[in-house]
Image 1 (spheres, rainbow, N blue to C red):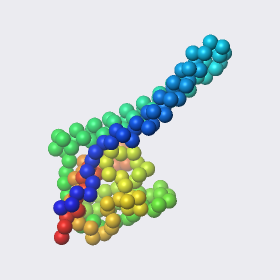
Image 2: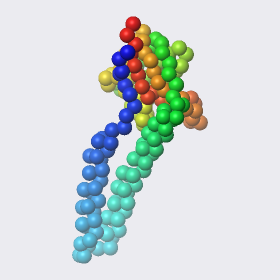
Image 3: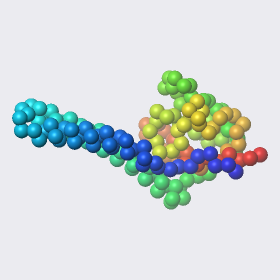
Image 4: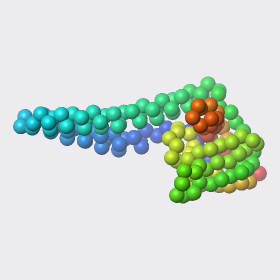
Length: 164
C-alpha cells in the first residue's frame, strides 16, 4: 500500500498571515498614539484595528475548531475505512464553475473542492490531486457527517493506493 494523503495541520501557513496583520496593527497603534492626530483619525485607526483583529481571529478559530473536531472524531474511532475501485469519477474543471470533484467507492460518495474550507482532503486532480480517475484502487479513511445545509458529507482523512 502506498500512502497518498494523510490529515495534518500545518500551522506554518498561518504565520505570514499573522505577521501581516501584526504589522498593520503596529502601524495603526503608532498612528493612534501620535498626539497631533485628530479624534477622527484615532477613531478610524481604532475601527481598522478592530476589523483586522476580527478578520484574523474569526476564520482562524473556525478553522482550528473544525480541525480539532475532525481530529477528535478520528482519535475516538468514528472514522470509517472503505477499499475499492474509484467509480463515477468527475474531475473538477480548472475554472471551477461552481462544480465539485466527486467519485464513489463501493456506493460511498465523496465530494470535495478547494473552494470548500475543510480540514480534510480537498485537492482536485487539476491541482495535483492524488485521485486521478476511474479504476484507481484506493483505501480511504473518512469521517461521515450530517449537515442541514448540504446533507451527508464524507471528510477524507487518509488515502492509500492499493497495489494490485
